[in-house]
Image 1 (spheres, rainbow, N blue to C red):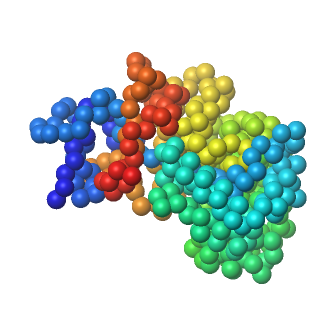
Image 2 (tube, rainbow, N blue to C red):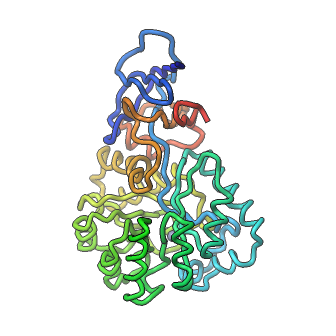
Image 3 (cartoon, rainbow, N blue to C red):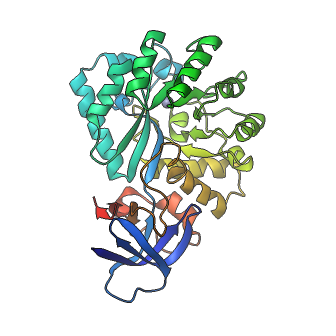
Length: 368
Ligand SMILES: [Zn+2]
């Protein structure tokens, strides 16, 4: 029975990420104890560092990393719309080039504290297989497949974790219902890009008719839309950096919080920005503060939840919050030169922490 004790830390405990100053005991891959104060025996001194759950990136397109910055001088539609630059880029690179690029991107995710991502993978069964083959030894890929004809739907459902529709205009309403029903029957996830561009023309209402597992973007969703999302208990994945870089504007994270909508964060197209959750959470905070000067520590805590433990159940991931009897999967951040003198831990962390603060990532009690 091997035991490790990490002391002199701030531990973000449980589903509420309650900050506890003290120590944590790991035994047999599990967290045996979290306590305030100092441990009785030998321990590794974290020198006032932080223990928190790893990031989950709830929306990516990692294969786009094969052609970065192609959005320059182009509108969102010209980049990622039907027949856009992105699809030309995916088609014009070989399978091995795509594999190399995806692998490098997954490794970058790992180096920046992300242990799982949910990817919208284009290209039918072949596209899904490519990401499975590229898979990282640690970072778990939840793959939402895409198909161009209905004949392909079953094949994609078999190989993927669900269906990620490009938009509500990809098929007519009846076909969309059929896709939604088949996806539910297969017990897979269903999602769709919604209301990324204004005007939204009831997009959120139309999406809710499909009873999706979650929707992506809701950049131009209004208050009424957020009320509907809350009523239907459908979570939203916001992608603020990609939205801004593609000139479609920042999402209304403050409305999601005000209306108690479950929300998570994603980095979207790797062509547009790196899947670095430290940067996404910091940018999200800036978007939130831009819209709501009253946003404070409580809102910052909600953003930290959204980027870490929020989507764990949705994606059925094999770890939970940092808590006693929980799986010992977490990140250890050092104070560094940037995280000292914080007057609010949550706001300070999400605004200032960087990947160079990562001291270790633990999975089931082992340092990766
Ligand atoms: Zn997307």
